[in-house]
Image (cartoon, rainbow over all chains, first blue to last red):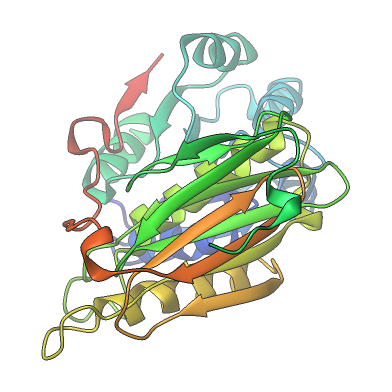
Length: 125
Length: 183
């Protein structure tokens, strides 16, 4: 079950953050949010890391999704934390770059709440 | 037809933006054009990078009780596509300004889907802190919109109803929605 699974969603769009919070909260997830890679790293540092999975957009100001994944994989405590990309992009070269940076998977927007739920549960169990 | 010299310089190429499409100027003289009934066209412009783009959509009505004015998931996706394409060409989200056009309620006695789509666009822009500098929406007549993506200038005119394409709601590409690939 998704109860007690803590997700950090990282997206610069306030509208997308609101959609994700509504979709995930209604399925029992504990949701925290950040607006870009820099804010995500700050949130994780302030909260002792404490999330089960990170869901990040790619195109963001200050620090994009690739930068965030690389920064997290450079820290030993996030080496095994699942990181899923959620992006409007779907090109093979972008996916390859995410994979090489250490992403766990790629989900194409617009998201389907059921598929997103299944993916989150699969990578956290 | 009134002559607009700014729209005629260097004989710009006219590109029609159909429902469900997103188009961003490539830096050459272009006019992005579309005819709208109930649909919305959102034109975004970064005045420093001189990059503009347009999308064109008609969102479905939301599920009852969803608390939204239209199919927000797909609408947010279409807006994000436009913003991302502008960022790819050097635009900056914090500099973008917006125009919205369309959203007519073409048939009396039916759901005011044009109003719902205009409200979605206005709410999205407010949430993203993108200034809405021009809006021509509502009413019950079709519009033709011409947008110059190099200058960020738009012209919206009422046209004969027959000029407006009869369209259904912009359908989400079901086959690809939310596809998951685990590495």
